[in-house]
Image 1 (spheres, rainbow, N blue to C red):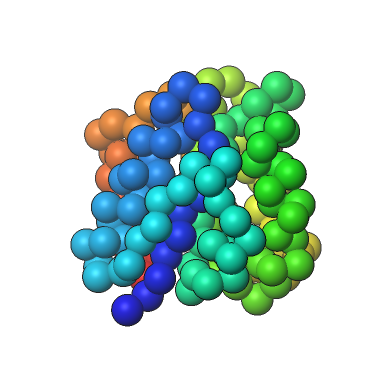
Image 2 (cartoon, rainbow, N blue to C red):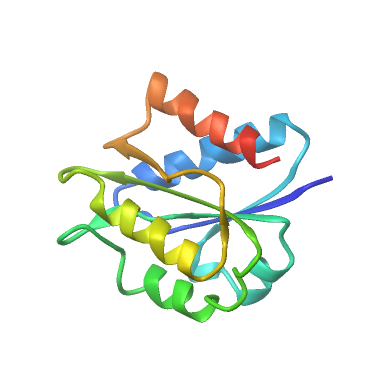
Length: 140
């Protein structure tokens, strides 16, 4: 059984909703899923997983959340090398620059990034909710 850990930061609940939908998709495919707010995540949560999905909304001038998520990502930068990683997040403005930069950062760390990052404007619903579930299925 594949072990998928989903670690996210959410301010308004949109990224958390994405995380839950991704978890649902992975569980449909038989994965063991652990859903964690980044404030509860530990380095071992990255080490022990077959696949890790990181989620953060776009913040400020299109960056990953800086007070909790980015420090956690920095702390696991050497652990993601060779690991299957997915990235996701919500946004309210901009064109997804934060996600492109994040994917590039993970590529440079040697992570095996699953896709080009899944972004959803505001809350996931309809097709975007199904995109989240499909990402979860793809992780397994």
